[in-house]
Length: 341
Image (cartoon, rainbow, N blue to C red; front, top):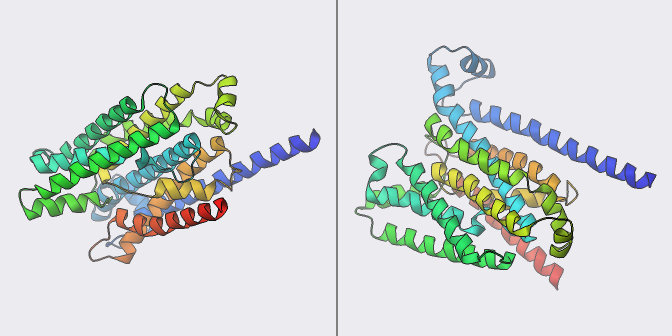
């Protein structure tokens, strides 16, 4: 009994150490995002620009260009990591990621339609609003297809169906674009980027991301129970249908709002939970906050990297995460195949 208690205490201390380390990494990555850019601004100038309230060039660059970009990178990375960990815990599949339930594809379609119809040129927030509307419609369709008491497999199939159909409609929109410049603008947006985002995008997306994150943060104990099996979770008093609703709508709010303002940034929700799972002892309730912090670190670091790797014509963030994430995904597939043989 004493050794078991000591082991549990040791595990909690290890988890707290991991969270503290990740929190420090988030602060460092956030600071790097504010410091790196075409204009050379040092740490004292950065701090002065944030807290002084003056309106010189350095202050404008930090407050109006880099700060909203860094805040969005932190929020989007955190929500992608959190939703990826929650989905992998619910589906009990390490290859699950936020786009699996159709939210990313339907949000992309909604935003692309604002390009196609010309609404994006009428007012600045038409693009993110269209993306969030697409995400909401997509998640309602997924829930309707999945049914009230569906299994995780049914939810996956419904998400794949919505993703495929939304992707086909996006391709059709590109094919029917009125001119090549419109098609090129759509393609660039679909690649995903934090560049040229303002505080308008932050204020628009933040309430949805916060609400979605709060929903997903409540899933720790139910997901812990689910690791013992669905019957055990039912016996412990957890309603799996309510759990699924909170999971899907929380993911829709988080990922839909993120895709609506930045385009698709893939693989963060797949890579981060998988790397951190062994570190926190494979416990979903511990993995959720760790993945949120890890997702923020990865997204901020990748955004700094795109500025350093291609300072002239900035590489798109979604392209870089795909270049890193696709080989990692293949590694996971090969490793799982070896385990099954």
